[in-house]
Length: 294
Image (cartoon, rainbow, N blue to C red):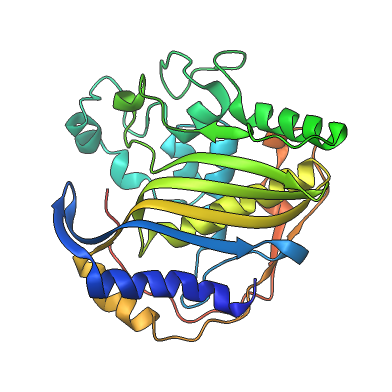
């Protein structure tokens, strides 16, 4: 990814700060723009980690691997020093969602459940759901391999986390709701993502990284090359108390993106672990503090 591609993100921040509509929402005051789009190259092992601030890429990747395993227990993330779901996993927050029947740290049928066990009746985060529901992620892998081997392109390689039947059982309805994968040029894998709600300051840098990681992992797993990640946003918003920090960030000059190295291909998609990944030449500006919303 040439440096200029990060300017897409910075430009979107600038535009929202300057022209965004002030709104009062569920968890605070935001400045909002309806609609946004960015595209990032993944070729030659490039990984679009934001460089105008430090991104906690290991935290991002650990969360992705948790999704890929079909997990919904926040305690697993806590034990791995990942705290991003803590606010949504408290007794108080779960009760506020009407989920008083869930134990603390049980997030309900969120992303991982939908990716691996779509619409399987949800009992709790300790239940073994193997063989239940629809394994969307494995279906994506099978579809990629079928398309690759047949030489016929497919426009049906879709995975969705938005399940109207179970959305009210989730601690937090999914923000990144639908991803689609595409094979072009015979051996190049790209991903498009539709995100209904995008916290531009804290969430979006993670979302860009997470789905770029996922595309690289699927490409590795299916013996393809990662090509591009394209990000479509429905509601792009900045919280009012993030503006000062983001104004500091947008004046910084991006560095060239780092590279991603993945060790050997695994037998199963859930077999990958954090030790299988390395980031090379990640140069970044200092971290920027912002308050996370639940």
